[in-house]
Image (tube, rainbow, N blue to C red; front, side, top):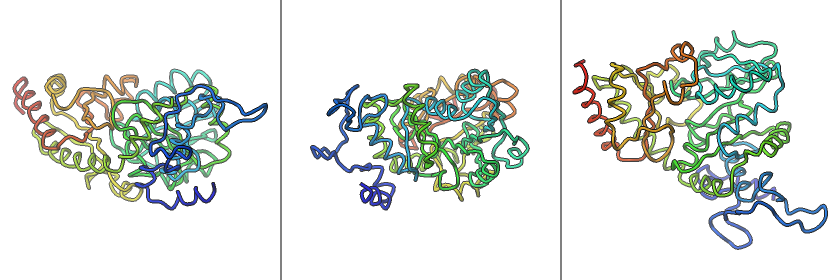
Length: 396
């Protein structure tokens, strides 16, 4: 078994994503990992186990997925959850009331809601700062700060946090760095290699990739964290189902191809948006004049399919959302279909107005998840919708 793991570690990432860690199902030779749609597993005898007892604790399909995603991120352990929020909720269980956390200020609104509406009342403390500015993190550190939680790039302002520098800061006082790597996926970024202690994914997004399943992941390499995280997963019961595990395994097989196409499409569309008269500003990590472009080049191997932009006229928002046809007005990202989101009332509606505005999430902001359609068709759709805005509103 150790030799098999060693061989897996030497394979290229694309091969790991396509073939997983087992290559095929050993008993039957099945090329596709079977869906072990079973809640319970037979014991050979008293105090004996096949390694699988009850699917909430472990399931063969989920185990193959967990091993594959761990290897893809360069980690030792992977845990698969029913949602990304389930993964984040499990992480908080390894800390104690009174612990303090620093988080990216423009973090996903659901994460903000989870921490402030639920975990604050259990005695945890949270500070929300612009983690793309190292000085902001340093000023917010307290003796009771136990973790820094960053999205990089952030959702939706596309700010980039220096993972290595942030890890060094929190490690100096014995704390942990948690990185949400949803926006770049293991294909473009591996935070553990830069000092992160835990990596989070909403597997619903790029990993599964087809807007047809919910999933979440924690990946890490620390033996001291594995047992408490595994206990939290089993005890709370937010483990990923066998069928959704299989869907995510299937999605991972095409992740390299999809991420390359997402990046290619988004680069074209971001440049087109930047030159449109009704667009005020475009936020895209692939631009060479992005404030943290050099950090991106240092810690990632590419961009993604995410673009945010300000409309010049906020009255264009409802017209744009109603006028797109190929691009869908929907609240998600990372799938093969292009989706347009209005963060102010959707993904970041739970964040207080003052905090939302200070981070840049205002009434003019749109977020576009660029899919795998032909870029020309997507540009035509945006152009038609923006022309509708011009017809409905004032000339700019």
